[in-house]
Amino acid sequence: MIQARGRYRIVLVTCASMVEARRIGRSVVEKKLAACANIVARVESIYRWKGKVERAREVLVVIKTTAKRLRQLERDVKRVHSYEVPEFVVLPIVAGSREYFKWIQQNAG
Image 1: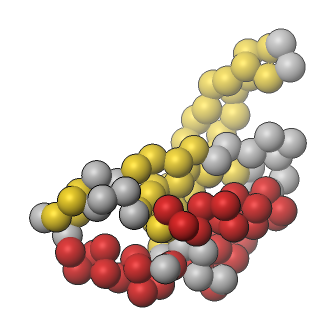
Image 2 (image 1 turned 30 degrees about the vertical axis):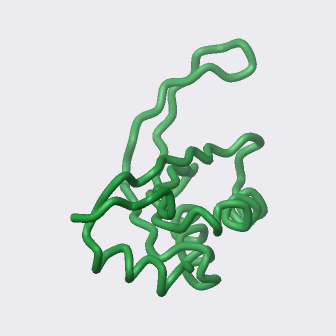
């Protein structure tokens, strides 16, 4: 395992449907804005929206990318997303395998 040195990120995006999640995942991978997009089929979200507590079933997309691709990735997600305020949460990757980081760099660098 090696230190990521601030180069790699995981981005979380929730979607209204599996169709939307697949469209976003495919778009960002095809454009090399991300190396990978994992789709978690069913999550239950509880959130506050316009003064009310809401509950919804959503689909979570977990995206692996590089720090330098974040701005373009966010633009692309927002462009195709159906939500007024889509979730776009970025988490740093602290450490991982050298081979995996090399693969991310080759596919989203």
